Amino acid sequence: MDEDLRRKELLKLRLVEVAKRRVPADVVDAVVEPVLDGINGADPALPLLRSALTALRLSIRQYYEGLADSPRLGQWQSTDAPLPAESLEEEELRTACTSALRELEEDSPAASRYLRQLAGGATTAEVAGRVKISPEVLYHRLFRGRDQLDRILVATGVRT
Image (cartoon, rainbow, N blue to C red; front, side):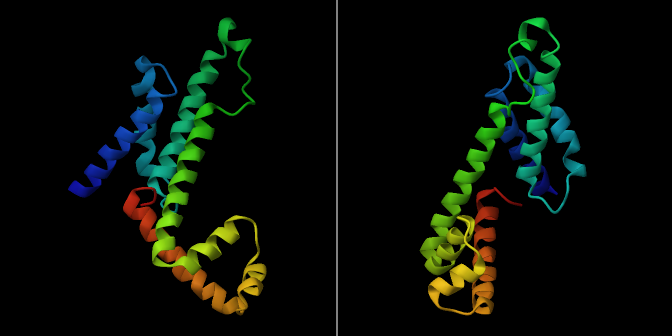
C-alpha cells in the first residue's frame, strides 16, 4: 500500500511540474486535482503516466477553452490548434522511448535494431527479409525485445 501511495505522490509531483509550465501558478492545483481524482478510474490497459498526462492535457485544454470565452483571449486563440502541452508531452515520451531503446541496444542490439526499423515504418516482412530470417523467428525475437523494452520503461517510470 505504501508503494501505491508513493507512486501517486510521485505522479502528482510530475503532473504539477508539467502544469506549472502550461498554466498560471494560481490555477495549477485546479487543473491537476481533477486528474488525480480520475486516476482510480483510469484504463488499466494504459500506463499510469500516459493516462495521467492525457487527462492533464484535457484538463489544461478545458481551462484554456474557458478563457476563450473572454473577448480579450478569444479573438487570438483557436480551439482547433493543438496546445503546446500536447507537443511537449509527446516529445517527453518520445525522448524516454528513445533512451529506453538505447539502453536495450546495450543488452540486445538486434532487438533494438528490429524495433527501430518497425518504428520507422518497415513491415515485419521487410525486416525479416533484410536480416534473412523467417517472419516467425522475427516475431519471437520481437516478442523478447518488446518484453525487455517494457521492463526498461517500467524501471524508468514511463510505464507501470
